[in-house]
Image (cartoon, rainbow, N blue to C red; front, side):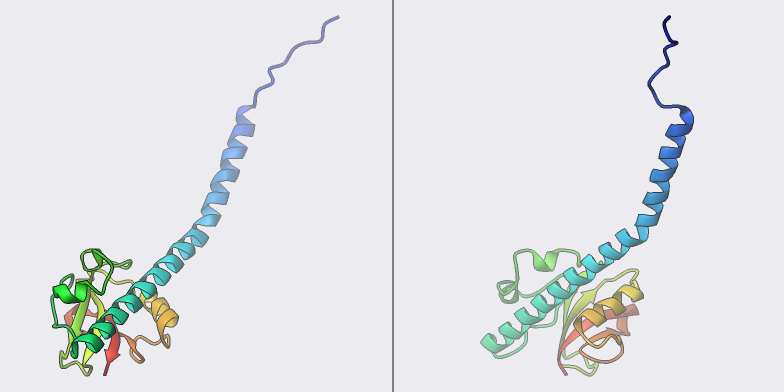
Length: 158
């Protein structure tokens, strides 16, 4: 006698359980993915601002003075030769455009940072400060400067 044949597929309950498990795992992984994304932004921004600061310092040593102040995303052509191609044209990892600020009367002689930052994430700025400086955005070399709605800057010279 032949035994009855059954389909070898999955039941709807088994499929629903598998989908629920995948959904729960993806929800649990989201905070870890966000932390990894933020860590990448912090590392990228810290590297870029150090590179910008180094270029301004090298320019000052070779030219005998800091480059002239310019609007965010703009720099004189000589300074651009000290930076990677297109550096001043690209948006920073945290938004906004790279900016150089020279003798602005804000208590420092030269600084580099971000201008035109529309909606800053202060928690991310603090994490950047921990990576670069002392973890306090009011003190140290990396600061949140209050003018223009607030901007993060790395002070090159007081």
